[in-house]
Image (tube, rainbow, N blue to C red; front, side):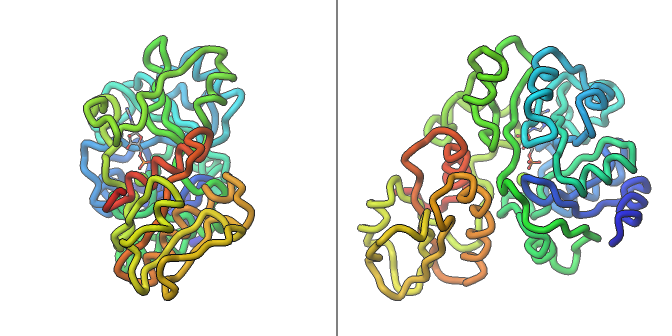
Length: 327
Ligand code: AMP
Ligand code: MG
């Protein structure tokens, strides 16, 4: 579709697939209850899982939410970019977007195609990832198209997403900001920008009782999953010594520079990075899981990163949620 067709669709209660710098989004007007329903139906997304609304800047974010000093300070540093704020919502925002919560998630995307669309529609645009609920997020347009098959809505192809995982979600509704979803903007970077500590209640998969499901309803334990079972190991060494790896499995490795000996020779090896650069690993994560899935083998194997800080903590978070078995 052309940019003009996309603008027309969004202004007329319809939906389309758009590129963002994080992952591809399934877009609708945040004010169209009819289009919002199409997004939930196509994704098979539970109505209890709220959507992120995209705005061109912090000022227009103020049309739909009560912004504050923290959001202003952080937007000055990180917007446009992959940081989402949870703020009290204004009345104009339909309950269908926020799963009935009194808060709304807002972010300003940096992808030039998405920004052109925002500029031309002059509407806030909701855009969850363009994939069936709980499956792998698409970082290339072809993956979104393949995920929806014959039900695929019109799309704009903007190439491979630069960042490759979803935005960091930060709750700014209390004097003590807290991270609800790890992402590309790290805890350390947010703390530096605000000059205060922010909360993160740890890896919820290790501490299930800590989840506040009311606070962040969509943070399901099982998410981002390939169709092929993903076996996840605590360390690379553990993976390489595992008896679980069988003939014809797929093994995902952090970098091509590793000189490794796989326990079984007939496995396919896929690399997340040529150099080991954390940004490259992040960018290729979902893409590589998608490629592994397409090989249609019995199992995929991957290992967690040992440096569980910075952007790799977000990669580990996605791997934990994608895993079928953990060792
Ligand atoms: P996705 O659109 O799949 O990237 O997911 C957006 C996520 O943002 C949701 O799954 C929630 O975890 C979070 N979120 C969105 N809106 C809110 C809100 N009002 N309060 C808390 N978390 C939210
Ligand atoms: Mg998603």
